Image (cartoon, rainbow, N blue to C red; front, side, top):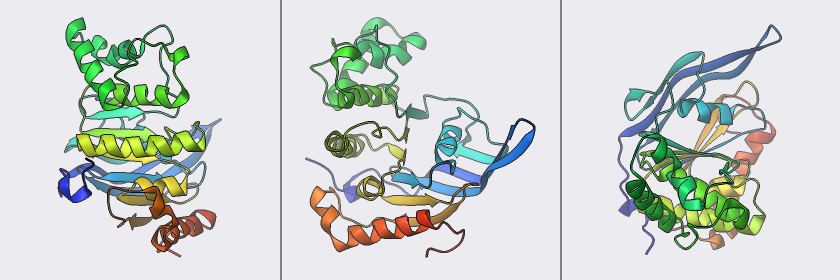
Amino acid sequence: MKQALSERAVTERPMIEVIGLGHTYESRGVASRALEDIALTVQAGRFTVIVGPSGCGKSSLLMMMAGLRRQTEGTILVDGRPMLDPDPDRVGVVFQDANLFPWLSAIDNVAFPLMLRGLGRSERLDRASAMLELVGLGHAGARYPSELSGGMKQRVSIARGLVQDPPVLLMDEPFAALDEQTRMTMGEELLRIWSQTSKTVVFVTHSLSEAVYLADEVLVMSAHPGRIIDRIEVELPRPRTYEMMATATFGQLRDRIWRQIRSPQPGNPA
């Protein structure tokens, strides 16, 4: 049975804190401001979605949270400690492309991070098998990426992101390349996995409907340079259903996001 949000392990403890973050990069000797004065807090166990216009820096922000890119200003804390480099004990990452090794089976793809850490084959396969069961692919461990559909590949990628049991899962448009039907199914599956694991999830998407359907809260970013211009609490009940997409409340939330992305202005919501 799916758990309602109130039944999950959600606390008021900050899991991710971004303080005064800014980022400037240089291209051909010209400095460009990518992110400006980002401040946010994500509570443990929450599902936070980041949306914004193309090029606003939302994926860059996610990569900084993962320790895969270094900001030029400010601080990122994950579980109370600075995030300076990749740390799979604290953060798992799922990208838009599944990035599976074609010469490895599904279970070996999931187990690969554990191999890098020196775990014995028996232990890493046991843990990888448990993660494949969690994402609904317990039957497909012996299959190779060429034998998997797009949705199945992304499930393997999610399992790989979870196999080291980090408290945080960062997801950068993981369903963008999927057809609409598969994308909706994957959204439902992700909420099931989140409900069962109590992870803190930060999810980047361009889809406004996906954002409202998945999120506890939606953070809206402005156009370049990226700033957070709105924080929207999504007070739809859980478990979420597709029927909610037809409600007035769902439409109002989606419209509020769209109006700001279409005409982004720092400050209060339009």
